[in-house]
Image (cartoon, rainbow, N blue to C red; front, side, top):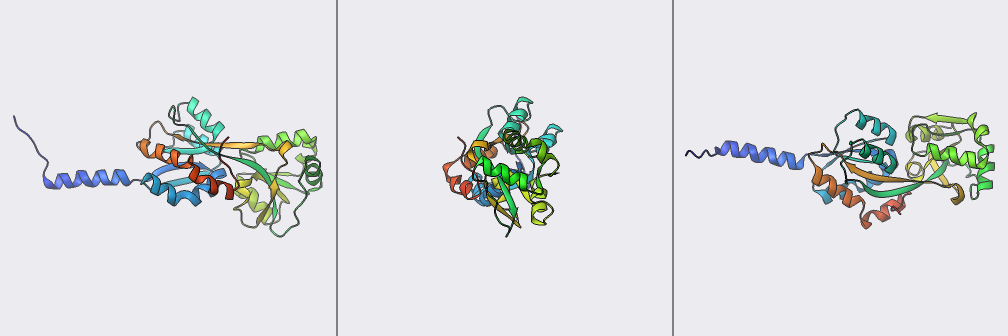
Length: 252
């Protein structure tokens, strides 16, 4: 019987390839709603999982389409509804979903502008009716809830003519910052980091809605262990202070 052994050079190559694989970035597709939190926590997350992160941000609906069309990824951090849809479609590995945060909807105005009164449903109704224009993301997770809020306040028809729909919250915020829209309605976590925009506050409790966020791992990922470690990190109590600062909170 002949026993073949690898030459020293071959052993070196195997070790090198193994090291590269172990240090390869974990590819993350994430919602704009958690962008501020993830960017703040990225160094801690990378230390926790022992791997670098390669992160791309977009709206949850846009990321959903990319994943459905076959785009490769390791971990998705999106609204819980979208993660659920992708799991049912076999695009997220069974049992890999982990709830990590939730965020309410708020209103933002241009930095330096007077903050309107939104402390109650009646005050919010008057403020929205008096606004010259409002903007929000046509494909954002909060859109359906904004429409529900307008309907509940009985102002849906009146708001249509003054509503500017944009592609994503970044562009919606930019409209307020440059003065081409008076107010932006979107997740609080998307208003706080926007340059040239200040948060007025969250919607009143009686018309507030929270959007939940979760992680999920691709069934085709070769970095499953790192993905699980990343989900565990974002679901840990250690991230709660950062969530609060960025306008979010731990899941209920």
